[in-house]
Amino acid sequence: QVHLVESGGGLVQAGGSLSLSCAASGSIFSINAMGWYRQAPGKQRELVASIITDDGRTNYADSVKGRFTISRDTAKTTVFLQMNSLKPEDTAVYYCNADSSTSIYQLNYWGQGTQVTVSS
Picture 1: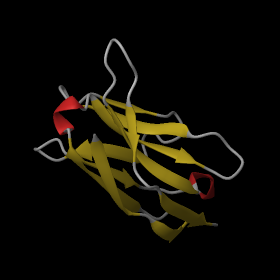
Picture 2: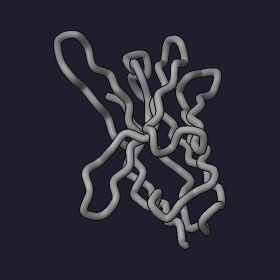
Picture 3: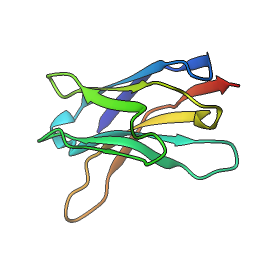
Picture 4: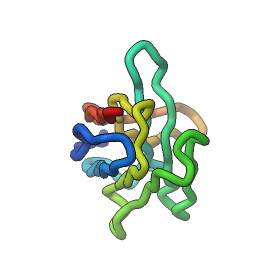
């Protein structure tokens, strides 16, 4: 079992910056990747950014490339999302994700979500 605790988020004007963090605990050895997803009202949850545990490779949604940066601490138990040049369309609930899937089954853990609101 993996427990994720998110922090950060809030309200910011367009063009501003916010940062999110997500701390994992429990069976952290099982985590293959961590990432951030977001869900805006009336829309499906979508991947924002992810980072592979072993080699640190990152992946970003096209809509955030060049504006958002995902990183992690040296212990590989906390991931951060630095969000710059925020736009109103970035408004959503942001969820931290830990992927502990294997070749046999899929297993994902989710944080409680944190609201990010960007005003125009």
